[in-house]
Length: 433
Picture 1 (cartoon, rainbow, N blue to C red):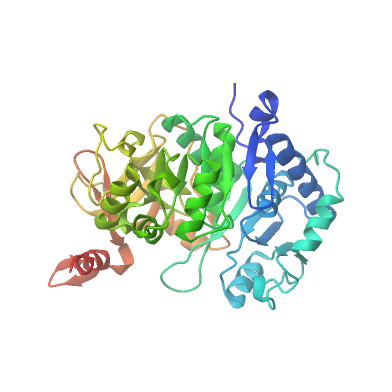
Picture 2 (cartoon, one colour; picture 1 turned 180 degrees about the vertical axis):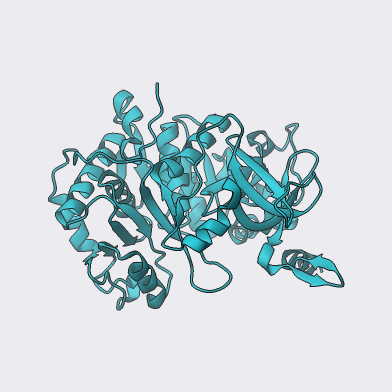
């Protein structure tokens, strides 16, 4: 069967075989694939009724619940470009993204657009909808397919990078670009309908659309979208929903491992837990693994990729397996990617040598697509995609076993006495004092 690279059709395979299978669990709802399909159709029609046309930007700043997932799928079916805006951003930061993208619609918790506190951001020249207004529009729409032919190679999502200097840049990906990493993760790691992927990161992060609803859809599994970011709340979600895969930040891993109120059995259903490898001290990993009986798998990824570039082998999750943890590493590249380390001249360097991490398609694999652009930033786009590869701006090296080790951001390297000093290395030393 030919693979569809359209997010608008991402649910089709399960709909054809088992439409009643659970697709999404949130605090307020449990949706089957048929339910999510119907809701996405209603959301697409609601957006079209607001004047949204293919290529228009649809922004949302909403909590982790059913509405934000439905809005995302609706935007994809309408051929719109999704812009998730973190609720934690200050009003001026939200407004910058809305203005820069000229958003046609902005869906937020209230008319002010600034989250629970209210007041401020809105779609200038477009339509700003409160959550209640959006829910009413969706509820009143038909659940028949909207009938828009979506181009899977056209812009589909924008995510603003935090950056280290200046204004953030909007990274643009196509529907195909977002679906590829989800597809490869499913194929390479053997995920299937038993996958229950839980996440506490905000769904408004574009990478999280890949690692939640798109990953689950490709596997035919279930997305569990958490509304808690504290250790006890996350443990409760994992326990009650029998999550099999979860990823979290180092600070949360530390809390889970150290809090007596979280029992080892609370995470007993997990087959895998992920975290950013370069950011997590070994002491935290050791404490987590000692308590919960499985390893935390290290990953490396970035918005421009999008999402996961490298990850530990799935076999490394078992403490008694033959594959162990590689200290300080961030796993091996996904099989559809050619990840290289390059010097200042752009030449590839040997294992053990440090340089810039660059990402491109693996030989003989035509699935990967580079990011389309930095939104309306042609010079920055040309620099980042020079030579037909993604220049990540991250500094690292490969060891002899093919594991990627990250050192720091290229622009943050300090040259002292002719030697490179990496802030991340300094931080790691300080953690050990």
